[in-house]
View 1 (cartoon, rainbow, N blue to C red):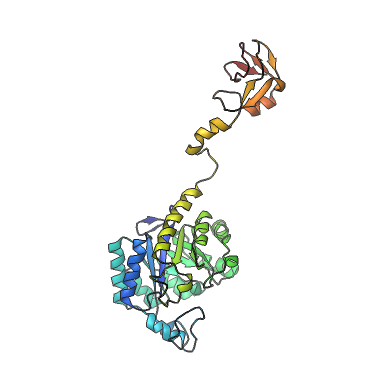
View 2 (view 1 turned 90 degrees about the vertical axis):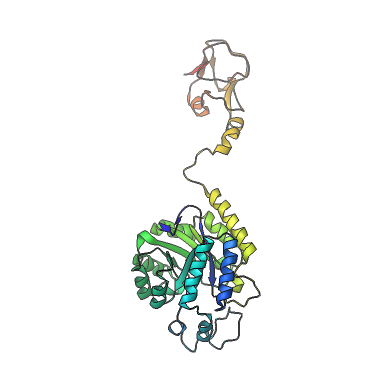
Length: 342
């Protein structure tokens, strides 16, 4: 699977989730995009919604939101909306900065507006059971990154059965803002990968960098991390968002963790070659041996270093003995050239 010019499954795709940390201000949105690009992320993600179609009119502002100017969540969302022309300008800005532009649609109209602007769609956890929206986005025939926060296991099973298998990335997520360590449940990443045979990523709501790094160590192919230009900005996700220097550190750390993950099955690494010969053992004679003499294990010392061509220790322990094919000095390595297993 590819998202824009990136193959999914190599180095993790690092997504800076701006969300609504722009407060509805286009200039702040553009400055936040620049800061994310400067930090080295692969993608910058925003959200697009129609406030009147997203939340009931009397719903109070969410408890984790630090901005108390609004009486209701709908009123707040109305202030956070970015116009279609702003989204288009952000997409062009991202293209110029060499980062992927992504956006989460919360309704079909927003999905239609975003379709020419994004190479893939993100679906938020709250819409994991919103099958009309999922179906509408799926018909766009683009990759879909879908978060699983707030879900039961049965709901995730149903969600996966509903997704286009060849172009879907499942994101483990916990819908708590921020997420405490004991609820992060990172074991879900390899669990999802084994259960569904899909690429699995991580949408991180913890307040620092550790969980994202651990997620990549467990196989996450993408990491979404909330991003804010400055923590003094009263963004709704301020408590779980990181700033530019932290994001730059995360990008660097995730590359290292991905390199550390390596491959299976076990093989001798290039960096181990010297140590392997110096730290492994071979069979050596404990004393001088005459040609034709039979050696038992009592006549053999297992010493470092390992000698090329030496009889394997496993073979020696299975053999009745070793016959010398020539005179051997003490501490001579026993090889196929100077001795024979019997």
